Image (cartoon, rainbow, N blue to C red; front, side):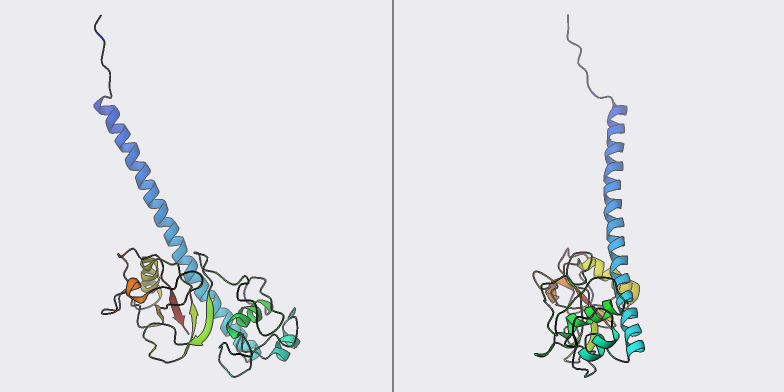
Amino acid sequence: MPRVLTGFTLIELAIVLVVIGLLLGGVLKGQELIESARVRAVITQIDSVKAAYYAFQDKYRALPGDYPGPHAYANLAGIASPQVGGNGDGVIQDTAQARESLLAWVHLAHANLITGNYQARDAHPDPAGEWPRNPYNATLQLRHDADFAGANGSLRLNLKTGNQIPARLLAEIDRKIDDGRADSGNFRFSPYSGGGTAPVAARCYDVRTGLWNAAGGEANCGAAALF
């Protein structure tokens, strides 16, 4: 008796292809939603830290991190000692006397302006401790410096987003909140490393045009939001 050969019909193959297409579409859409959520998270972090900074400045007539230790000890609940403070010179900078960029998070947290249990025993918090992080687990930084594109040596207060952020996400953030360029405006490329390898300018944006390399696939980039 002859063997009957069986196989997929055209209808069955079409159904399989449709299912595969739906699955691929779902995966791609899911990735897009995840990236959109991370874009919103970075923007929210920037806005929240800026709001906390200005609220602190308005209430205490000083800058978080730069706030002298005796004043912080007297006015901020939970500060460990009168040594947990900066030099009061009107800028947030790290010196031999104090690590003001880390003390900034301690002061903001103890003023109940940001969430997080950030502690210090003196003017030199442990840099390996737990500090605010971006959605890619790199630490943020708040300080006066020129560590951003187009600074030309001019010190500005800025919030570093931390690295490990894809260039395409920074491009989208920049388009939403600034001018879309990595070397101008109030949102710019920064080589600051919040963990791991520092970002490289030429990989993250075109140094000739100032535009982010959104299509280049570079995953280790970072930015600074200028105040």
